Amino acid sequence: MSDKKSMGISSYLLSREARMTIIIPILIYNIAFWVLGAGLALIITACYSAALEMFSRRTGSLAIIALILTSGCVHYLYLHGYRFLGIGEESVLLSVGGSLSVILVFGFYSFIGRPVVRTQAENALPRLTQMSVYGTPKYARVWQEVSLAWMFAYAVKALLVVMFASDLPNYADYFVFVGAWPLTIAMICFSFYWPSFRLASEKSIKSSTGDSSP
Image (cartoon, rainbow, N blue to C red; front, side):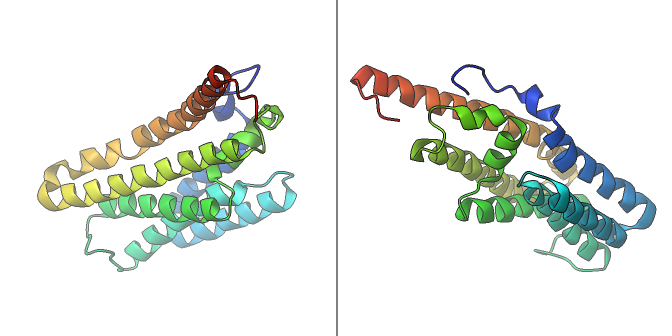
């Protein structure tokens, strides 16, 4: 989605930004959870988040780690007897909690004008900031659309998981799985290709009408 080089999904997933803000904190939380329990897993992940934000030269790490911590808090409360929306199945609750985390975190950062996906993409691929449309309302609007798509997708996922758990409990775990990694990968793909499509389509429309404004 750049003027000279297209932005590849593999470029981001293999970047240092993805390793530091997504892969490592997920590993830290899960390893700590199984070895030390949910409470200490949250504390250790929070400490990693604070250290990363303190020493990193880039912004945006808190957004991704906030997703992990929010989901972790839901899991922690579940393990200590708290139930949300009357959900008793652990996998269903974690799936719904993860969806709510995405909606809350993405919604907050979109509200303050710093969409999560935009920040992560620009950190991993600095050439995005060299695009001719960078800094324009059009560029900002496209990333807000991506953020809204994430929130909508995970809201639908949460509703469907609750419905499946209530009406078709034997199939709930299958849908929980589909709404986990497969949905995340699908949304990452969308996050890379939708901006490319939107910016290219608007550019072609302006070219056909003779409008050369950014």
